[in-house]
Image 1 (tube, one colour):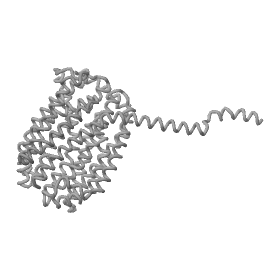
Image 2 (cartoon, one colour):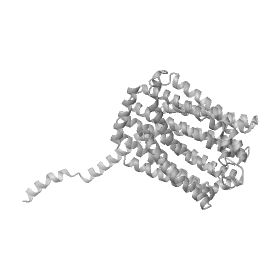
Image 3 (cartoon, helix red, strand yellow):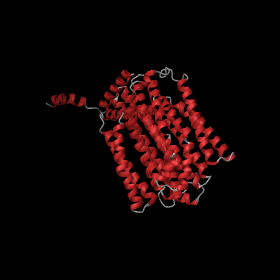
Image 4 (cartoon, helix red, strand yellow):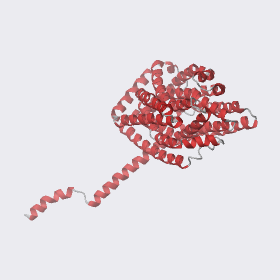
Length: 487
């Protein structure tokens, strides 16, 4: 009986792994996951690394211009901040958003190996963005009157209006550059943009110093150097893209670029609305502070915090770009689970970086404004809102990555509605209530608008968590086939 029981039990026992094997299996699983994370991180890094560097350079160019403006005087700093953040920033956001449609289409076409479509898409985007750049131009010309009509101080409005007109050449460079930058990024060549940006940054610093400090051209010299830098970058990138640097994806100008522009405009418009509602949100914050007592100090302090937040945000904008490309590529290649895994890795890495950066903001709270201004009043004002800056930086680690998922998946229309509700039905009214209703001033306005950002982030996170990635891969395949046939 015992022998029979032992014999009967033996097969059952043989099916159970030994303790050592269990541990070995666990180690193998952990090793496999670590290897998958490492491989995905390398793929993300091909886009994120150059994109972060490129974005930091662009943000640093703005900081250089702002710093030179700040040392000219408080009025000059406020005028440059208002013109650059509100007027030029509003229009840049529109063009950037419209160019994100190109990111969806080019990324998915590249994943599906429809390489010839990338050049066609870029030409369509040029047509649309340059047309809209013309339509947006009057905002620069009449910006002084517009700002004054909206209640901004007369002297600040006049000075900001003069500065805004100087930004017109850069405005048209945005419409030229954004499509070619997206075109290069989606085929993993944004290192070209990063290298060009590094060279242009040196030009920017030298030109700004020469025109402002040596030639004494003041705020006009700041704007002139700004335009020169963007024109130089446009020439370099267009020459590379069209001059033989992309033989697989650029085969020359084609009349196919004019085919079915209506559908392309609609996709670009929904992308523009999505990004604009998001980008304009914090620019409205700077605008609202102009209505407070001691407007120049309020605008100076808040614009400095926004510049620091934007500088750190450039890291996460790199993750936005990397996530958008990786998700689009995987969906275009019919690999929904690959898109999901890319989202997880990118979100986790980005958030860890934001935690570290927010701690730095808290540690150096009383020294943050020194690179922008020597005014003790401005330095103290920035110190007073440094906690809100740290919290904003923390949110930066999640929200841009989720926006990258939306762009890579083609959810721009849906996210536009989310942005309207979160930002403009919750965030702005709450900020106005705290800022004026409860007399909390700038901290109240900012805290209210952080609440809107939190709401938007939570909704996007829920949408992403409930996403059926295999279904999204099917949609991407249908989109690639549809647009290829139309072309």
